Amino acid sequence: MDEITLLASCLPDAPPPAPEVVARARARLKGPGPRTARAGSRRWTPVAGLATATATVAVAVAVTVVVAGLGDAAPPTVAVPAKNGQILLNIADRVEKAPVETGAYWRRRSVIGSITSVDAASDGIGIRTDEITLWAPRESDDPVLVTSKMLRGRFLALPRGTERKPWNPAEKYDYKLGEALNNTCRYSWKVEPKGVLYDRRAADLTFADLEALPTDPAALLERLKILWADQSETFPASGSTARRGLPRDTEKEKYLSFAAVSLLNLPSPPALRAAALRILADRPGTEVVGEVVDALGRTEVAVRVNADEPSDAGIPAAYQVMVDPRTGELAGDRSVAVTDRGGLPRGTVLNYTAYAEQGWTGERPARPRGCERVASIP
Image 1: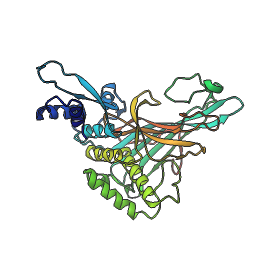
Image 2: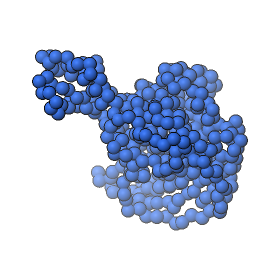
Image 3: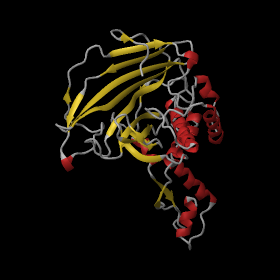
Image 4: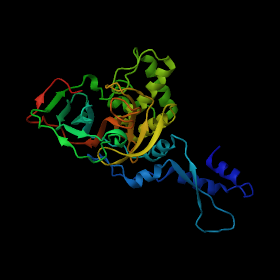
């Protein structure tokens, strides 16, 4: 039953709405159209979830009802809960017709944080933060540059007992800073074989592969199923080794979810991004958590992917991706504790990644000075 039919059943004495009224109501459900962007390459700018964008992807949608005999009076609104994936579908509707952008390099600066230790004696946690900058070339014979800088560690004493609250990097705390670290800057500079991109959860894809993928959701889903069938090993789960021993249909569903996330994490064209959002919205284990503030203070849409598995610390965690409501791109991800264990309360953010800046650029990277060159950076 759609929203208009639901409302009609609640008002049995009212005449059915006219077709133009239905059209206007459905248009409102989709939210505003895509923002106008200048042609050419998008400038490398901070990723920001704007309040005006996130307001259009609320969990409840407003359906407008025009009551006969009121003429042009302002129509009342009735809140009708949207289905769980509707937020993602609304974002997809807005971004699919956005202009295609390109450049010489896709550049991204990430801030990565994680809880590294739990001190039971002092009820404190140790937190490590790194900054990683990636330059992914469009031409496969150009080198990929990855720079990693470990920032100063932090320590936080947490209240005891019932006053203890989950740690959230979006909150402000009175941290105790650790000692400054020397020689914490490292970089890798090498040509990637065959130009394969950095996120391989869907497949070993190049820029040319991304542009060749179908943008119809049904066709894209079928292509991903073929990629799944062609893989000789179980797909890699997020951030850890894939689970073994699951029923094959369960493994396939997990792969399809992560493949959709992978396409959102890569510099996919807008239409492909929209198709990936629609596939993710339709997966059985997808749960839209809602609007959250990330570690950089931005409002994003958090989506729990069906990847609930123990984190590296052995604490059951929920893997969530952060979707930028303006662009449909991934703005980061995080793992959140789902139980109280190891001195950490449920809801603690165990680790996170926030993309501070990302976009196409015509610039070319230069080897960073004062940094140690290494074979690869994970």
